[in-house]
Image 1 (cartoon, rainbow, N blue to C red):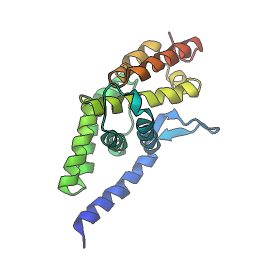
Image 2 (cartoon, rainbow, N blue to C red):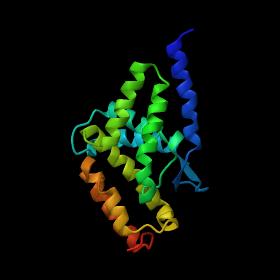
Image 3 (cartoon, helix red, strand yellow):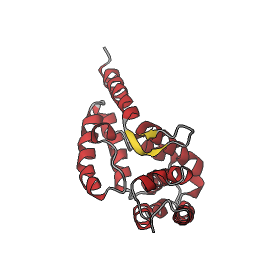
Length: 196
């Protein structure tokens, strides 16, 4: 029996639960259902490949894609936290670290440590790769909200100031994408989707 393979396969099955973690953002489709975290991770990883030329600094796209595919697996245990819910966000860091410890420990030690380090790098957002990855993770819900007539912003009474404050980190990874996001925010205010 290949113990390494057994550990890897057990995490693969555990990761299937990410498909059941619902986010506050709706998919851009006729039914407008809530997006799940697995879909979000795939979408933002693909976005990283397509938008690489807009990163502020050169990035290792394979590391960025790994970060984005791994970044939300902790939501299996910790759940999704609405980015504009300040109180819940304060508790989320501790919950997510506990989840990361559990999930990455399911793997063979060398692989678990390597992937946890990538996850931690994303969380700290200090390297060019992680700044770019974090920028995209912030931008994609904004894009979906914007193209769904501000659905999540309107449902939760989000203000322009909140969106600017929370998402200004986009500029750390891509000033080009942040400039575009600010245009969307201004338009969302004009359309009445964001409170002034």
